[in-house]
Image (tube, rainbow, N blue to C red; front, side, top):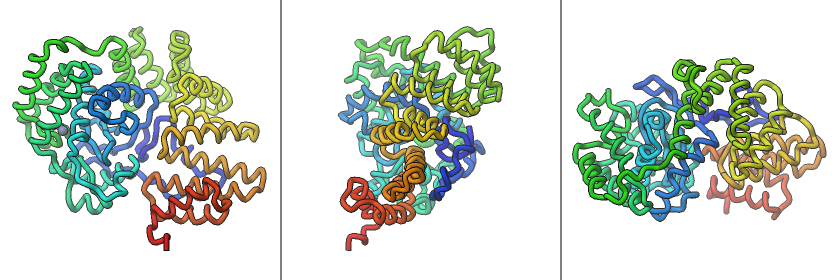
Length: 468
Ligand SMILES: [Zn+2]
């Protein structure tokens, strides 16, 4: 993993260069070091893990009368144990917490509790822009407030933040014990209504309970930001005992297998050396081989990594995430065309994954074959339809349209490049640059065309005075 802000697994710094010489607005750089663990935060995107988190969340969100597709579950690379809600409908989960959960039920319990904070409106009301803020810009704001988090004063329910400065000045608000109790009660209601047992949630809370007696600098962030008390664990325990219908009603082996793959993947990517020690080549279990394949690849042992990867693909030839991983491995080693055909298969198996489509398009574009340009653009547009605010997708689209311009010298494509860059900047909360690119797009695009209208929306949203 790199320390770059929101650098996804599927990218490495070499790919961050601008495409075909197009000037890009500044890519928000690394987060400040986390004072306690001296660790930088980065934002992890992974199609497989995100799909798994959504699967765990979906029944909870439905039980809470929330539309599952309106809630984002986002992964922060940090070994501390924490989870929080921000920007209205975003649940952020640290990799440290994911690794600390032993079962899918435990992780689902945490998601249920965070959903309780969302449903209870335990957020400071924000300026309007905040409710639309992208995950990236929220992370930026959290970065601005990281000092507050590290001193333990902080909580992470961020709703009304007009910029990092303001957050740092105010500090972040702690949830009160009353809000914790209310989020727990809501979590139990959601779990009950969804026919899911709360035993996992209880187990995880009981595991953290011992921490409360520790001095605050030794507690996990979760304990500091979600005050735990004996009362909380007792009421969870009481509820589990008195809901006999759901006792022992744990998520089954399919979920457990996904959970173990998630943990193996995270360890393989983030701590390859530790993964190779934990999962030796004597260990025939699938998650063990998965972790090894990733760890070998991460430690520059590509041929060995590919041998393991091929054995996994032999077992599950239709697994889109295995195909994706192999594609990523060979793409980063220059076998672009082969990678593109693996990504193509992954996309056909999992057509609703925007991350897979973006990765596929990236491989097509790197191939530099004009005949593949339209296919790349179609996949990027579909990825954007599925997930609006992924800045990588917009940057790739700007590059692809720029290439179209070079080939055709049609000015419309110049307008489209500016438009895509405006979206890219907007997705990271860089309003001023977004307005600048939107202006350029408006000059080049045909007046009244759909993208012209969208560029105008961007301009109005970042500069309300522009209406006059
Ligand atoms: Zn809480």
